Length: 187
Image 1 (cartoon, helix red, strand yellow):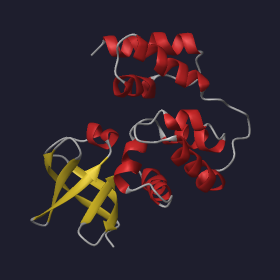
Image 2: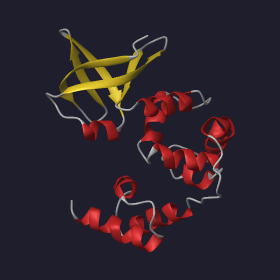
Image 3: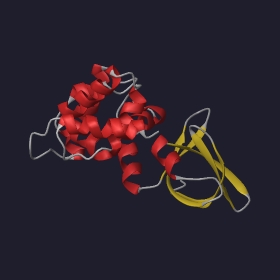
C-alpha cells in the first residue's frame, strides 16, 4: 500500500491533484481544504489511502495524518465511500465533526449534503466510541444557527461552511455571524 507521497504538484483541479514523483504523475483525490492549502509547482508531502475496487484504484491524499485517520474511520462505516467521506471532511474541521458524533448531534450531521438521518445515525453509532465521548454536553446548535442565518442572507451552504471554519469557536452565535459576514464580505 502507498502510505505517503512526496513530490511536486504539476496539476491542480477541483477534486484532485497530480503529484510527480520520479517522473511518474500520481492522481490524488483530495478534500477542498487540502486543495486550498497547496499550489502548483510546490513540493508537497501527503499521507495517502489507496482505495481498491474491482474497476479502479483511487489514491486519496491528506496534509495531516489526523485527517487520514478520520477519513479511514468514516469509510469504515457501511454506506460511506471515499467520496462521501471527503464530502464530510470538507464541511467542518475534524474536531467539530468528532464533537457532533460524540454528542450524538444527528441534526448537525444531516446538514451535510448527501447525509440523511439513517446514515447520520449509523455514523454516530459506529464511530461514537472511536472518537471518544465529549466530557461536557457541548451542543453544536450555535453552529447550525450561524449556518442557517448565513443561508437566509443568500449565501450558499458551502460559502457559509467555509466562513464558519474560519470563525473563532469561543464566541456566541451573534458574534460568530458578524465575524462570518466580515469574512464573506472580504471575498
